Length: 52
Image 1 (cartoon, rainbow, N blue to C red):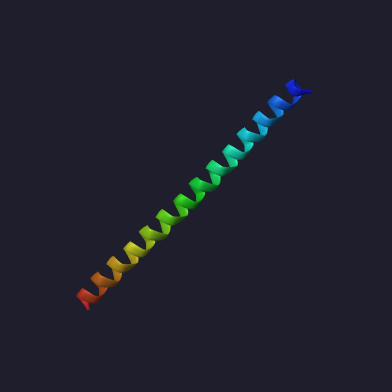
Image 2: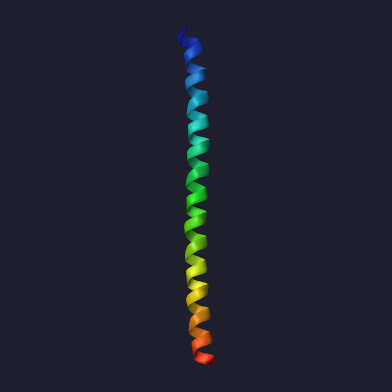
């Protein structure tokens, strides 16, 4: 029973790690994308205001 339980726990750990890594990467990507969008928007507003 311990032999059967070991690999199952390892498999669950791998799945949790994979999902956790994916969620972390997704959130990191979303945060950096929103920061880039904000920076671009501010630069655009600054340049547009300067040209106007």
